[in-house]
Amino acid sequence: MLRGSPSLVKGARLRIWSLRGSWVQIPPPAYRIVKLILLIHNYTAMRHRIIVTPPGQKALKVIEAMRSRCYDSTFTYPLVVKDGEGCYIEDVDGNIYLDFTSCIGSCPLGYKHKDVTEVLREYSSIGAHKIAGQDFYCEEHALLAERVLAVAPREFKAFFINSGAEAVENAIKLAYKAMGALPGVSCINAFHGRTLGALTFTFSKPVQKNNFPELPVKRIRFCTREDDEDIDAIEYLLKENKVAFIITEIVQGEGGYNIASKRFIRKLRECSERYNVPLIIDEVQSGIARTGRWWAFEHYDIKPDIICAAKALQVGATLYHKRFDPNQQGVLSSTWGGGHRIDMAVGAKIIEVIARDRLMDNAYAMGRLLLHGLMDIMKESKDSIIDVRGLGLMIGVEFASKELRDRFLIQAFKNGLLLLPAGIKAVRVIPPLIINKEEVYEGLEIIHSTINKLV
Image (cartoon, rainbow, N blue to C red; front, side):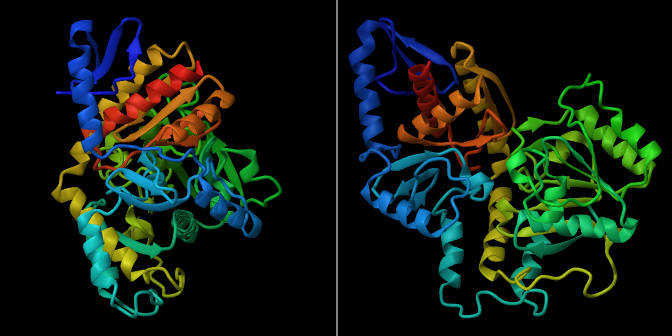
């Protein structure tokens, strides 16, 4: 079986993707038959479809209203979302886009997933859908804790809050409570959130930090190579300084989808244990099967002391070894923390579906397919793409310049593919965990044709 677009022509040959993940040259005698098969398939299968040049009139009306009334935040292109199904998003003008963002990992099952919609249907008639979750108990709080702790290291406990930034805030509070008001250690190019405590340990873009105060902090290089000369920096730092904690991502998200070397992460764990310093792993974007394991740190054969989670979980979560429990009421709390009953029910269902449908295996397999396809595109890109890297369905594509990256994102959007930036000049590729081969190839087709037109 073949998958492709009849417009992909190179010289005198038709080129399409095979399900083995490589370009296939079609000889001229077979052109008409293959084109007919592809046209029939493209007509009957759900695919991206641009019927109105974006932004259409309905989208423009919404965008203008928001720009006049709301802060103009981190919008990359003029997408106004109306609906979604599977790995596709529909805008208010009827355009359908293949989604390679999964809303920065927050929609791991894509859109209109039958199990999620069943939960939403069940809760549609419940009046007390949101409660003061640290003041009153609810079944959803207990269920989500059970599900997430079943995939966390042993002897861990959970504290639920609203967001990834709050997960980090409470993680560092637990460390400070145990260690005292000492400096924390974080990495260059890290992103841990935008609330002031978390922002101290963020160091990815100046615009995120200019004129904002900081807690005491020491920074080390985030090492991506096994032979990086700075891998031992943490050991020298801990010999000379008392610190409250070390916090790091495994895959730097906002910093550019940089993947930590195994030796670096293991060095952090070794030194933090030797000097009795808590190690916090920020899994807000990488956690809950995104990399082909429940947690990205599992690829490194280490166990942290505290984990920050959110996004795919639908709520924020600080997961911690029980020895860091304050054992005193009131140290941690949050009005809505553990009170989003619908979100917690959906989060618990997401964990169940990932395990039931073996979506970690799918993330690994589809991630490899995407990675190899992107590497093939890189080889033909005339040096416009300079690197492709990834773990599972968390892939970064590095462009030669920010200007080229930005043009590519806009053009890919106009061609029906949703992607988002990372770092200075990278693109993050993070489709829903349910993605299949045909959707992978559809995305690769759009990326390939978009790059060709740009260069």
